[in-house]
Length: 454
Ligand SMILES: Cc1cc2nc3c(=O)[nH]c(=O)nc-3n(C[C@H](O)[C@H](O)[C@H](O)COP(=O)(O)OP(=O)(O)OC[C@H]3O[C@@H](n4cnc5c(N)ncnc54)[C@H](O)[C@@H]3O)c2cc1C
Image 1 (cartoon, rainbow, N blue to C red):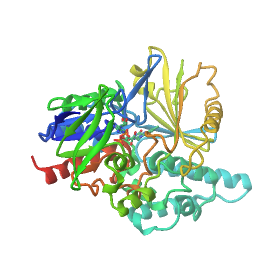
Image 2: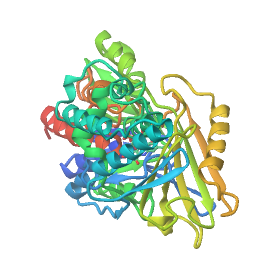
Image 3: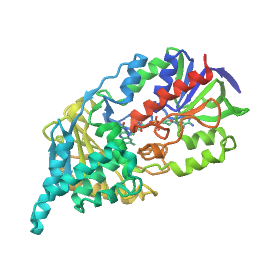
């Protein structure tokens, strides 16, 4: 077997892995990033179909999040274009939420929904109920841990049984926390609102996510390498410490000796690569209990005119009360570069009725197709065409999230094996999605400095 030496090896080139790789090089470590797939980026990458640049997962990067901070720290360029505007599709009606105080605007909308419903059944207006929800939510967000028991839906039922209001919050739970309102503990929602404040400062990469990832690769390659089509086969453990990684490179096994191994492949794969005998029972039990991969269907639609946010607004639409679809972003409203000239690209995300069990992919495709017809009545007229509809089940290695968003569902970044760490969206962070992944990379590189030195 061939032998090579680096200071650090990163397994996987998702946003967490690439941030870790670039930060390690920035700190002076000669680093190798190995990626099993043919292209870098994992769920933050770009796949070309008929000249359209499709996202492989994330679309929105948050200005206030950790990804821009890592780029800045390592001296990489991150081109972002604001995509802030929000509209809600609620059972067929579209409501635009103006910028400014979004929470107040959302409650105005909820209030209207409560008043409309009461009018229908001949009661008196329910502003009081809405004020109660708003007040209770404000108190809960300021003390997220006080509420220990119920799911978010059970918490909300204390204030309203209006199913339209529940649908709005369910869509928010699925989009931000990766689980339904009837699955996720209420405090996870309050924590999210307290830490990420609704994450209302999203932006898109105009040239596609892969070009942003390649900027990080450029940093890595100033004192290291990125190898694609190069799966890690084994993490070498000697006397309780990680000392190298065996990879398959150009058809041959190569053993890379190193001082630190950072795995971006998710804790389950990390354990499989290093051998479960090197992990104590407590760690393995945590992994079984905490990791709850969320299934998803990702839909990419081409059209001749925008199908949603038809005025060309730069933003996204939260979908409440449809069968499966919970969010839509007309990417080309903001970044026309992502489609051939004159064409439009819409990215949609759909979640099955439960995130806790494997989905029936065929049934989900059927439900999503019905949703597309219902949400976009002009689908045919605007020459709408599904470019790709991709169900990713709970056993897919690139799911919506490797676990629900919220500290109780995350694994520690450090492992029982010395000099072996996890980065990515299953590792502990107070933040979700790409932002959380970048934060785990920052924290792990600090830990490498402490543990390995130079
Ligand atoms: C549909 C969808 C929409 C999303 N929307 C957003 C959004 O708008 N904003 C946001 O912030 N987040 C969003 N997310 C979440 C975000 O995409 C993820 O949290 C993030 O990209 C995960 O990055 P990661 O670092 O965990 O690595 P991953 O993306 O999981 O990448 C891991 C990489 O490791 C590689 N790998 C695995 N095993 C091996 C091995 N043995 N050897 C070598 N390589 C290996 C894989 O091939 C992969 O490339 C979305 C996700 C999805 C699926």
